[in-house]
Length: 162
Image: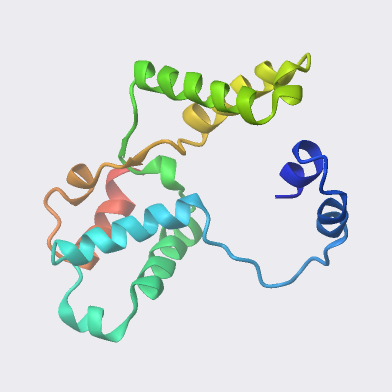
């Protein structure tokens, strides 16, 4: 957020200054892209009956998501890239990149025209697509193949992708 406000939105100096001087240690919203993918897994588990009705009654979907994320990321020391993914192919990624470049040129023409504008955009897009996998979703069919219970899902997550 700070980088966006300070580097790209030049007519928001007060917001930039606020973000630079914002006190650390406050409660932050940790619902980032990986959290929403864990949410998708928890939702899919409920939809497929993997989460039994007692668990659905006792816990909210947010609690289940937080526990899954903590188990996978915290206890197992794994991340979303360790789960089966469905990602766009290179042709689709190139189409996304071209649309993204066109929008950047339309919305931030000065930045886009700068010496490193397009190159920086391409580098950031490549990182998003090929390192962070932010354009991918979880392959639910592969993840839930043979899984009948929540414990079974946790065991599969632990064992299959170690």
